[in-house]
Image 1 (cartoon, helix red, strand yellow):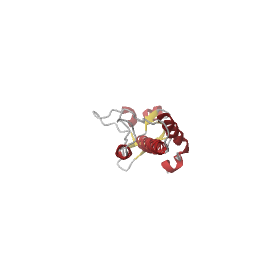
Image 2 (cartoon, protein in one colour; image 1 turned 90 degrees about the vertical axis):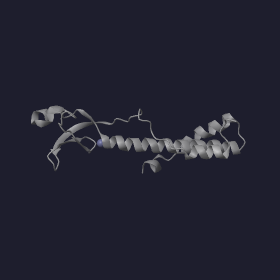
Image 3 (cartoon, rainbow, N blue to C red; image 1 turned 45 degrees about the horizontal axis):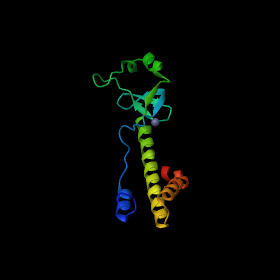
Image 4 (cartoon, protein in one colour; image 1 turned 180 degrees about the vertical axis):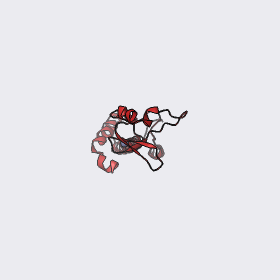
Length: 140
Ligand SMILES: [Zn+2]
């Protein structure tokens, strides 16, 4: 019996964790709006999101010769840079939304089964449950 419905099957699904797979990379691009030097004299790009990100010229690991000159830095203003902190935040939100959706789907499907609905009705109830998810509760 491969159908969802046994309490142990539901418990197993509820207890699973759902991390985003690496290939679902969020890759949040933000424009460079300025620069400053950190306490160790490394250049930090100031991004439009308010976060800062080091832009080191550190060959052979990272080559950014443009960061060493005023003209070079100015030439990169307005260009996109991947913001690691925004990536982290977006990933956490995405994982929390996925987790909440899965819990809602499983609970509604289970409840509908207890109510005696057929498989089609259970799926309908499960999908309808997504309308009542409180996103502000997840994000806060
Ligand atoms: Zn950011």
